[in-house]
Length: 262
Image (cartoon, rainbow, N blue to C red; front, side, top):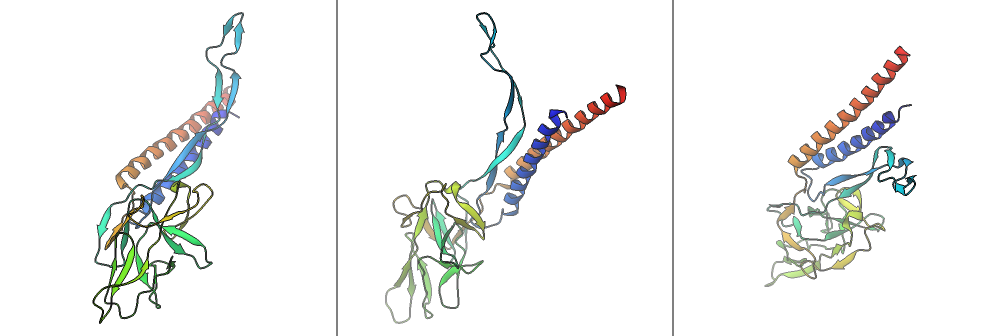
């Protein structure tokens, strides 16, 4: 079988994966706190016919080798944690991280996940939870029923105004976490990430201090997806897919010609 058929097949497979990654980015262009991904390509093993530097004659070495590649593959999908844009809201429980860092979220099994999405709500107990799944923020913060207003400082201190009190009452503190390699986090959906061996252990700290991002109340971080860039990438991937298909068609015509004329 002609090797170009298999080489082009790897190109088709790789571009299908790339288009899937691009489509996921475009689908989440309006998802708060979403971080876009990109496919990482790698060429496959080479068949070495002649080794560069091999002896071709007395006192003479080959300046170039002869190697035939086996195609390409997608080896990783890399998350890009660049800062998204800010959109202001009138909701006191909409929080944005300006800079590095993640909010901590307690999962139903007791484990900790991490998120950049600051769309929070309150449950029936007054606890601050994620709006989508109702997972409790860690450490847990409970808002009193008689609270008139909620204030979150840039450092993550949460205070409320209660009747009869001259000053705001502090009820909790948001803990921020960061990672040496955020791209190594495992995305699990629901705007949540899990720690992995590649991400490193979480580094806990206080917002706006020691390199952690500051918290902005009444604002949300939009997706960092650039739709124009993704559409350009989609066109490029589509054209590469078509060229690989053209190679397969050309090889098929060559083999058909040989079969019919020999």
